[in-house]
Length: 246
Image (cartoon, rainbow, N blue to C red):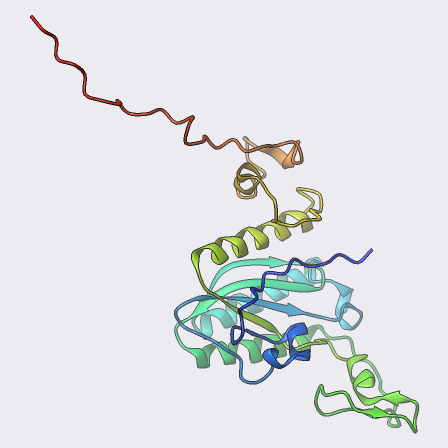
């Protein structure tokens, strides 16, 4: 069963997202919106059939992609705030002081992965290949140029990016990436509702998994909010103590 990703995009997010599935719509096209004031949610998604060993989690691929990320993040002054390597995509939360450096990072990092980890496929000369990712049907030959190109492409889509504005969205993204990392490592089972409807105790345990307090996600589904409510917190002296009369 194919899992469905949690939608972290707000309704009024025009001008904040680019690439990925949103390139099929008007708001996902045009120039990539980047800023130096906020963090960015970046997703690099691959076609696992065209990747060596078919997974970013493979030991050789994992080590090599980590090397590339550290190398080019340092070269282009991109600050990696959080990251999670999945089998067919990478979640990154990052920020940069210059937008041009962000563009260089997108281009070089994705290009180096494609040059070193892409499976070599021999394409017949008769197979039509498109230049861009715009669909163009070729009915006479019974195939689509875009389909022939995408069958051999490592990156089926442009890298997704979203500007994260607001403290609430920032915390939601952090918890979402941390949840993905724990699930892919087998620390906790897959959460169908993702970070939605999680108790405060569950959100806290996302960052404490593996420690002595919450080892290996025991009783994850049974935990309830352990945070004290306002009525449970000890109140200060409600009033000044009455002076003792002699």
